[in-house]
Length: 442
Image (tube, rainbow, N blue to C red; front, side):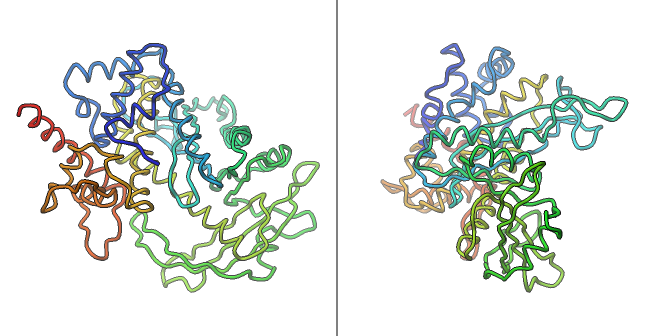
């Protein structure tokens, strides 16, 4: 899947319709600026004071709805999905903390004294972890609790059920692609499972279990599952995260088909338990308990579902790029509506960074000119001893870009991560601008 750098925003947002050709052009230009330098502030990303002021006018335009900004990307994501037999539709929620900023329309976060808003996207990822884009999103600010300690507005848990509904509706447009709704423990809700069963499960669902439910015939869900025979084992490397080094993991697997009580009826689910054995001393054993509507009776079927669940980390990576590369929590905008329009644009930028990183690994031999213009490629090759080849490879160019961001490319370093790439993009962009300027004045 190709997304050329010089015109990627024009291609991705070709169907953008904000009601005014000037607004459409401004949105595409802003997207290109933000993508070229994800770490930059809005003034730094823009080319000059006039463009900066135009950017702030655009973000402050109340006639522009953030959903309209994202609509073309949503459509392009659906188009890309049709090329794959299985698509994982990841959902999760993240807090956006704007505490201390003078922004109207924000609300309390997990701590009532903090101010900010919530973001809940649906992220389309292949089983091989190639991110194809954002499918849907919710943004909202909580209302304050009243004197009785209750909060007004609809229950936030409804977004998980509504999220499945939207994916189920979408399934009709994908006759050759099986959609899988995938979420973490917050989505372990009986109304969601019951709703999927009522609809005939047009989309599969796979959720990490949070509740050790009581079974109709007595006993507890997890104990009942592990009382059966061990189906086999799975071994993989747990990636490093939050200061914890990567390490090998070996788990034993159990799976049971079970009917759970659901009001006056029952819901048929498969419960999977993956429990680590021989964990290193001092390390907490990794144990996952998953629920799904899918049948899984063999080791291979269970391993496939676990591999799908492990792909959920891609949405955490998206949030990491949003917060630490795009630095959206540092945006200083006066109203929540302005934040929503900016966040909508940065969501697409964050996806593009993650998409480039994965493609560099899974399709290393793609022509880099499909993703970067000649000046950017020349800038990347400033770290090498020779000029760029006629057909530079994507992986090679990304590794050079990541070198500007701190990637050392030593023998045991593997492939660069998103942090090195997003930091490198800024320096490459600056060098590319200098190269273009020199070419102009020759």
